[in-house]
Amino acid sequence: MSTYEEVLEAWRAERSSEGLTKLPEGFYKSIAKLISDLRASLKMADTSTLRARLARAELSNLEKIARDVFWTRVEKSIMALMAGRGLEVEKLTPEEKELLEPIELSFIELRKFLEGLLRGELRLPRGPTPVSAQAAEAPTQPQAQPKLPRRGLMLVRILADVPAIVGPDLRAHGPFKRGDIAFIPAENALGLIRKGLAVEVELREGAQGH
Picture: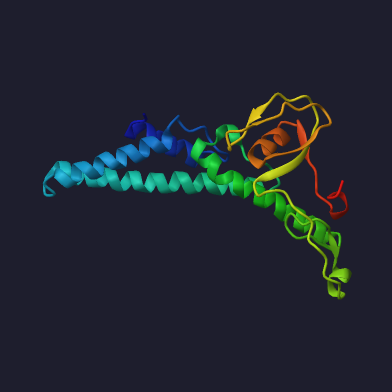
């Protein structure tokens, strides 16, 4: 559990670094505990005493530090995604990882949309088939929509043998052999892609029936 001084030092390090720093283990839990303890002590203290005034000042500083550290790290992560880089997962806290990985998935879809747009195609998120701008304007006959995978899964091609992995659904997936194609939880898929062990496979309407 971090002390007030350790939290302050971590904040200074984050502010002075261009990239993400490695926060102490349990950083956000420590801040929550410190704030909770200070609030509890203020409820029982005589508000006119020096101790109470010092506690209020310390609480105010902790709240400012918590906001600044959190949003600074979120901003750094978003800027990395906008530059086409992935999240620095090894430097994220468990809380940040859970909050930011869905945003990383959204940025993947945003890049795909823009890439298609620059090719003259209108690609809907997770859409089965790119549509040219010219075709999008022409009237079309209603067509049955292809069946898409469940939300939260990604289709990947495995590039090397991978042992069984446990997904956020607590189910085992795999093991996989090189060349296997499988739907796995997006969180696991992104991890394999970052390590160069898999690539995402885009679904096409013509491939759904195979």
